[in-house]
Amino acid sequence: MKFILTIIFLFLTINTFAPATHSIFIPVPVEINPWLDLWKAACTVESESNPTKINIREGAYGIVQIRQCKLDEFNNATSKNYLIATVLDKSISREIFLHHCCSCKSKEEAARKWNGGPRGMAKPQTRFYWQRIMMAMENG
Image (cartoon, rainbow, N blue to C red; front, side, top):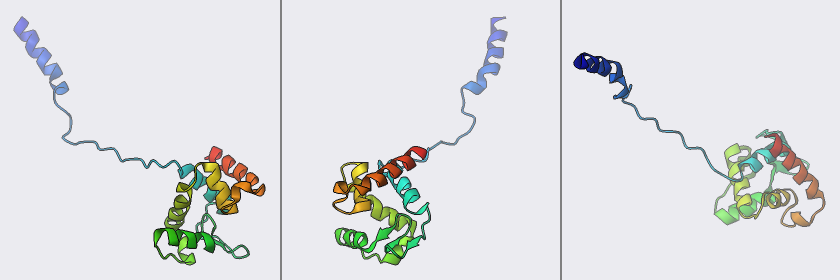
Protein backbone atom coordinates (compact mmCIF):
# COMPACT_ATOMS: atom_id res chain seq x y z
CA MET A 1 0.00 0.00 0.00
CA LYS A 2 2.84 2.40 0.82
CA PHE A 3 4.39 1.64 -2.54
CA ILE A 4 1.18 2.49 -4.44
CA LEU A 5 0.73 5.76 -2.51
CA THR A 6 4.34 6.70 -3.23
CA ILE A 7 3.87 6.10 -6.97
CA ILE A 8 0.64 8.13 -7.03
CA PHE A 9 2.33 10.95 -5.12
CA LEU A 10 5.23 10.98 -7.57
CA PHE A 11 2.88 11.19 -10.58
CA LEU A 12 0.94 14.06 -9.00
CA THR A 13 4.04 16.10 -8.14
CA ILE A 14 6.27 15.41 -11.13
CA ASN A 15 5.52 18.80 -12.75
CA THR A 16 6.70 20.68 -9.69
CA PHE A 17 10.26 19.42 -10.13
CA ALA A 18 10.87 20.59 -13.69
CA PRO A 19 10.36 24.04 -15.21
CA ALA A 20 7.57 24.36 -17.76
CA THR A 21 9.85 26.01 -20.33
CA HIS A 22 13.54 26.25 -21.03
CA SER A 23 13.62 30.01 -21.38
CA ILE A 24 15.15 32.67 -19.16
CA PHE A 25 13.39 35.92 -18.32
CA ILE A 26 15.65 38.97 -18.55
CA PRO A 27 13.92 42.20 -17.53
CA VAL A 28 14.48 45.30 -19.63
CA PRO A 29 16.42 47.86 -17.59
CA VAL A 30 14.63 51.09 -16.79
CA GLU A 31 16.57 54.29 -17.30
CA ILE A 32 17.35 56.01 -14.02
CA ASN A 33 17.91 59.72 -14.43
CA PRO A 34 17.04 62.21 -11.70
CA TRP A 35 16.40 64.92 -14.31
CA LEU A 36 13.79 63.09 -16.43
CA ASP A 37 10.77 64.53 -14.65
CA LEU A 38 12.24 68.02 -15.10
CA TRP A 39 12.87 67.25 -18.80
CA LYS A 40 9.25 66.16 -19.30
CA ALA A 41 7.92 69.20 -17.44
CA ALA A 42 10.11 71.58 -19.46
CA CYS A 43 8.85 69.97 -22.68
CA THR A 44 5.28 70.59 -21.56
CA VAL A 45 5.82 74.16 -20.37
CA GLU A 46 8.07 75.30 -23.20
CA SER A 47 6.33 73.82 -26.25
CA GLU A 48 3.40 71.67 -25.15
CA SER A 49 5.71 68.76 -26.08
CA ASN A 50 5.99 69.84 -29.72
CA PRO A 51 9.54 68.95 -30.90
CA THR A 52 9.31 71.16 -33.99
CA LYS A 53 8.05 74.32 -32.32
CA ILE A 54 9.84 77.52 -33.36
CA ASN A 55 9.41 80.88 -31.63
CA ILE A 56 10.85 83.29 -34.18
CA ARG A 57 10.30 86.35 -31.96
CA GLU A 58 12.51 84.91 -29.20
CA GLY A 59 14.80 82.84 -31.44
CA ALA A 60 13.92 79.65 -29.55
CA TYR A 61 13.72 76.25 -31.21
CA GLY A 62 12.56 72.73 -30.44
CA ILE A 63 10.77 70.94 -27.67
CA VAL A 64 12.49 72.89 -24.85
CA GLN A 65 12.92 76.14 -26.83
CA ILE A 66 16.70 76.23 -27.15
CA ARG A 67 18.31 79.55 -28.05
CA GLN A 68 21.54 79.99 -29.98
CA CYS A 69 23.48 81.12 -26.88
CA LYS A 70 22.58 77.87 -25.04
CA LEU A 71 23.52 75.83 -28.11
CA ASP A 72 26.87 77.66 -28.38
CA GLU A 73 27.52 76.99 -24.68
CA PHE A 74 26.78 73.29 -25.19
CA ASN A 75 28.92 73.02 -28.35
CA ASN A 76 31.87 74.69 -26.60
CA ALA A 77 31.59 72.43 -23.56
CA THR A 78 31.25 69.20 -25.52
CA SER A 79 33.23 69.93 -28.72
CA LYS A 80 30.14 69.07 -30.73
CA ASN A 81 29.01 71.16 -33.66
CA TYR A 82 25.22 71.11 -33.59
CA LEU A 83 23.38 73.74 -35.60
CA ILE A 84 20.22 75.45 -34.37
CA ALA A 85 18.15 73.46 -36.87
CA THR A 86 19.34 70.20 -35.29
CA VAL A 87 17.60 71.00 -31.99
CA LEU A 88 14.31 70.21 -33.71
CA ASP A 89 15.42 66.61 -33.16
CA LYS A 90 14.00 65.67 -29.75
CA SER A 91 16.99 63.49 -28.81
CA ILE A 92 19.45 66.33 -29.48
CA SER A 93 17.32 68.78 -27.48
CA ARG A 94 17.23 66.28 -24.64
CA GLU A 95 21.02 65.87 -24.75
CA ILE A 96 21.50 69.65 -24.53
CA PHE A 97 18.92 70.07 -21.77
CA LEU A 98 20.32 67.24 -19.62
CA HIS A 99 23.85 68.58 -20.10
CA HIS A 100 22.59 71.93 -18.75
CA CYS A 101 20.95 70.21 -15.77
CA CYS A 102 24.10 68.34 -14.76
CA SER A 103 25.85 71.63 -14.01
CA CYS A 104 23.12 72.60 -11.51
CA LYS A 105 22.66 71.62 -7.88
CA SER A 106 18.87 71.32 -7.90
CA LYS A 107 15.90 71.04 -10.22
CA GLU A 108 14.84 74.54 -9.27
CA GLU A 109 18.24 75.95 -10.18
CA ALA A 110 18.27 74.03 -13.47
CA ALA A 111 14.79 75.25 -14.42
CA ARG A 112 15.30 78.86 -13.43
CA LYS A 113 18.67 79.08 -15.18
CA TRP A 114 17.17 77.41 -18.25
CA ASN A 115 14.54 80.12 -18.32
CA GLY A 116 16.58 83.10 -17.16
CA GLY A 117 20.17 82.39 -18.13
CA PRO A 118 23.19 82.18 -15.82
CA ARG A 119 21.65 84.69 -13.40
CA GLY A 120 18.25 83.00 -13.50
CA MET A 121 18.16 82.34 -9.76
CA ALA A 122 18.39 86.09 -9.10
CA LYS A 123 15.62 87.01 -11.53
CA PRO A 124 12.18 87.28 -9.89
CA GLN A 125 10.33 86.35 -13.10
CA THR A 126 11.90 82.88 -13.06
CA ARG A 127 9.96 82.07 -9.86
CA PHE A 128 6.75 81.97 -11.89
CA TYR A 129 8.44 79.71 -14.45
CA TRP A 130 9.57 77.37 -11.64
CA GLN A 131 6.00 77.22 -10.32
CA ARG A 132 4.77 76.21 -13.78
CA ILE A 133 7.47 73.54 -13.98
CA MET A 134 6.53 72.16 -10.54
CA MET A 135 2.87 71.95 -11.57
CA ALA A 136 3.84 70.11 -14.76
CA MET A 137 5.99 67.66 -12.74
CA GLU A 138 3.11 67.01 -10.34
CA ASN A 139 0.73 66.33 -13.23
CA GLY A 140 3.25 63.96 -14.78
